[in-house]
Amino acid sequence: QVRVVESGGGLVQAGGSLRLSCAASGRTFSNYAMGWFRQAPGKARVLVAGITSSGANTYYADSVKGRFTISRDNAKNLVDLQMNSLKPEDTAVYYCAAGAYRGLSTALGSYDYWGQGTQVTVSS
Image 1 (cartoon, rainbow, N blue to C red):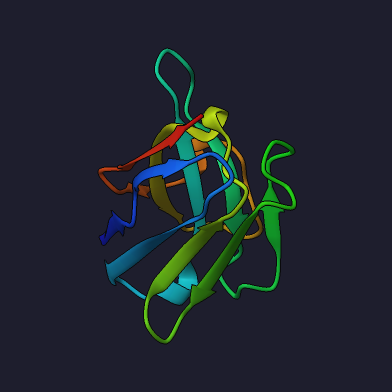
Image 2 (image 1 turned 90 degrees about the horizontal axis):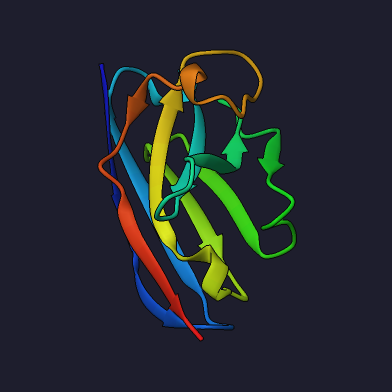
């Protein structure tokens, strides 16, 4: 069992920045690929950024490339999402998730443990 808890959401103006953090506890954090998903009202939950268990490889959705950066600290059981140049269309609930698999996957079913989510609202 892995418990993940997100923090750092909030309200920001377009062009601003936010940093989301995800703290994990339970089984060995370094065994899990981690992902940040988001879900806007009326839309599907999608992966915006993912990172392999070692941190060697990352994935970004096209909509956030060049603006978002995912990182992890396996010694501290933390994974962060730095979000810059935020746009109103980035408004969503952001979820941290952990998956016990090799590589990176964009599929929700690949992730076994989910946080409760944190709201990010970007005003125009």
